Length: 256
Image (cartoon, rainbow, N blue to C red; front, top):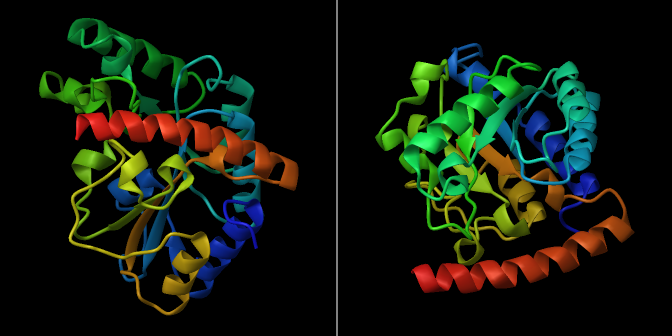
């Protein structure tokens, strides 16, 4: 079975359900709206590009009775109002995938004004309470630095996962760069954690779940643009991703 397809993603979701994991949204975690006696999985999606693939993934989750969280960038190719509305209508949470300090090239005042404006634009469709940084490896600016001068909670925000989740308690995995936890092509989407599980494919992750090797608290960060519904789409994504990862690896190696 090819990796990074909706077929294997469905297999991952079913494996988690069979092992008794409750699927909770990020907002459920921070409002304590979940069963503390059950193992849980926060399935988080960063919508960097190709929002139509996010909608397809959201529909698959709905079919399985699962609710997740989708963080949207506000760049024109991603900020599609109809798609955001459709995903929210399926019961999923919408968050803001911010990158303001990188976009403003380090101008903090401009960045916070941009943050407020984009937040209000998203709140026209959903009561945004949670945010997560977009890494933007081509920029020297880490947008999380914005909170060295400002406080996101002043804007009605409950959480930024990189600050507000203890990843020594919650296991974190990411498919950034269309590869699992690969730091060679992942500049900023990483966390400090004592967990050290090794897997390079979704099937290996499924086997860890089936063999009950993982903790009972998990956050998985998926980028729907990486996941294909057809063989043609899979090949197209693979070729694009290879080119982008080559550039990312060069950028990251220079910064190390």
